[in-house]
Amino acid sequence: MFSTLIKKKLSDNQVANIFINAIFDCVDKGFCEVAALINEDPVFVTSPNINNQASGEFGLIIIVGNLSFLESTFDAEQAANVEKLIFLKLSKIYDMEVGEFEKLIRSYQSFISRVNHPSKNWIYGMSKAIFHKYKLNDFQDEYFKRMRAPNPLFLKRMDEVVCNYVWNWDAFFKKYRI
Image 1 (cartoon, rainbow, N blue to C red):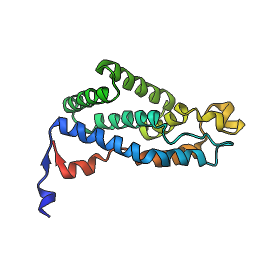
Image 2 (tube, helix red, strand yellow; image 1 turned 45 degrees about the horizontal axis):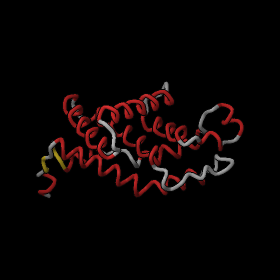
Image 3 (tube, rainbow, N blue to C red; image 1 turned 90 degrees about the vertical axis):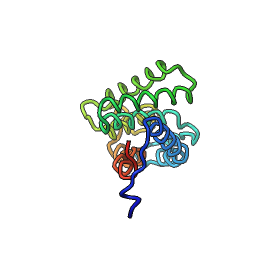
């Protein structure tokens, strides 16, 4: 009971570490299932045969999506501080300069916004980004292939998958304070 009353205070650096570690852990442990779900999805005429190790695009989409939720969770100054730390740490992981990594993230944000237009729903945008980054249009039936649009049934299933990779800030703030 007292543990819910006493919250551990975290620094922005600790928040950035927890955020990064949790995302990498989820992607590393779960992508093989995501790949299997995509490969076995009945909307595809032939299986896309996504390799269990091909989690790079998926990981970046999950990072970008979660960063967009970060910006809507914190006040502007704190979000900027945590985001700067996340960029610094992730640029080292990806062996890139910080500015180069930020440019990569901003290009993914722009890509997700573009493929998701006019919707503002980031979950839906992340699902569409997965569809396009893994070139899944090539495996659809002719109708959707000609439209160059994902089958809505696939997107609905992918939305359910992507929801599992979105950081739960409410649960985080019940346990910690910043």
